[in-house]
Length: 268
Image: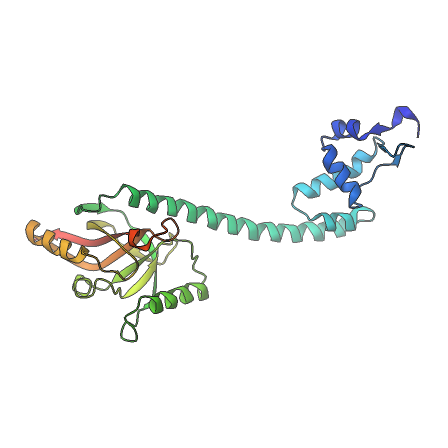
């Protein structure tokens, strides 16, 4: 090789924009080697090798594994590359779907966490709420066990079998206010606060209260709500929802979980 048409690894790196470390790594794994070596074993490249490097860089940027790039590096056809790109497109479609799901969970988590962090735990209000999609789980069988773990396990099994993302916050659903007052620690169902759910918490005026404690722990929310509606002369209508704003994802102590109680309310 004549000196004027050879390049050191540093010069070739500057020309192609590929780091010296990457060039050395590609050489080490046998993916892309220099045209030759000098007596001192220094790597020397020639300008036309940048064409091969463009092939490699293009596929690397598309997320194609280096092993597959190496497999086709020396001999490839348009059919080979088309098949590989179609397969890579399917892989990226799946990854995009996963990333979109993770992004939505993050946003929902942030909304509920911030509401829980700002909540006045002793306050009870009546306010207008927007429609909130949810996913209803199966009916809980409290007759079989008064422990919250079995109904929770059944709900998680249901979620897994039906493709419900487990990352969203969960809550409890009580068929009626009477059922909530009778057994405030035993919801009729558990719910997922999945924004794509087929069920919903309808828009309207809701009594809003809070309580702390682990799943299935009643606390004093029922007593406080009962006193509030008697004093303010409100009537409760429809089901009761308990949404866990702060749970095991962000709180290590179960007695510090924060849940929000929602029930449609109207003046008598």
